[in-house]
Image 1 (cartoon, rainbow, N blue to C red):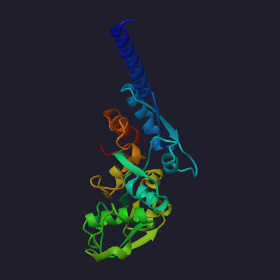
Image 2 (tube, rainbow, N blue to C red; image 1 turned 180 degrees about the vertical axis):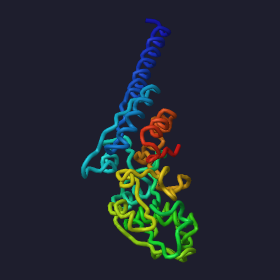
Image 3 (cartoon, one colour; image 1 turned 30 degrees about the vertical axis):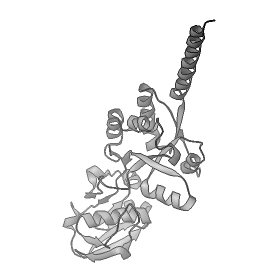
Length: 269
């Protein structure tokens, strides 16, 4: 065999091997951990969109006490999609996970509802206003009240870095009586108060939709409580991350969310 022939054969073998490697990378199935219900339904559409774009994705429903973050951190998953930034922040702080958010998905908005008034501004002096007693959702409710001009919160408060409680209220621009209660109770107690902040899950069960029935709804913009796609820190710049996020943030997925959930779940892309 001549030198030229040997070089040609070597080049052909190299090209074949590289093509095989590329094919292997292209056909890898990405495992994404989700919770059942909303995320499971949405990811059925995401996987279809990804498939059309040459990306194989399998949505794995994580149920019970099993942690999608633990599974991701351990390398059993390539990504997960079920949480918002404050939840991820607390998980990282408590467990030392090496995880990063790479894309926004949707928000399940908390809103104030009332049987008596059409707006928070219509509330009279001394109104009874119920808010959740857990840190995350109480923060969300207080931010709505702040944005509506009913209260002010301590200087420097940032929901991206911490939570707020009643002790963080520095002034009441309208004198209202804030009543703390468990989220599961608030939807059933709406008749007993002038207004109540109800998280999406329990509002939906009571036939309430934030964007339709809420008298004040939390903003989507600059909101840490939007849900996110999360990967391991070492993978955040991996070549499959951007296509995965793009598949989720597609027009097909946007339309599915809007049609399927009728405003109780709102896309943020």
